[in-house]
Length: 208
Image (cartoon, rainbow, N blue to C red):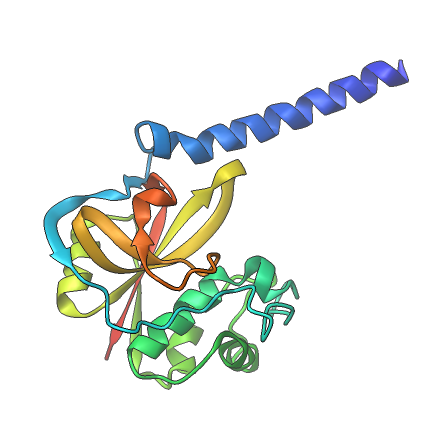
């Protein structure tokens, strides 16, 4: 009986992992899941990323082991959003790095208990020099408009096994967006289609 229960539990675990992996990869190899958009789309144009754009790698030894607010997990494990916000700040001339920004957000009560960033705290951390817009759903039109107007877009997508992740959209090549990905060691922007197939959610950050 115990062996049957163990096999049953293992089957459930593998079934759940399989379902999550299918959802995470579905957008990359087929139609985007409901409520998402493809990483490629919108107007076809070329928009080069800023020269010498700052890239913050979340596992950088300078801050990778530092605990974020709320959950207390390490930046190296869950700090993708923090790093994207930091990269956006740098592009807007606000000097920071993930460790300094994390410290500022903690002081401003800028994390939920789960360790998620409170977006109104991002504006206060920038001394109200930026404005953050939370969108109900992602759209290529919004991302394209952001590029043309000097705003930056944080985009959420799923890595394999359904792991949520954020990257910073900083340019476009044809119908494919260019991103700075805090999980990658290479600091150069890459095509979004090399990382995912669907965008789940977006946030806009622009100068006030």
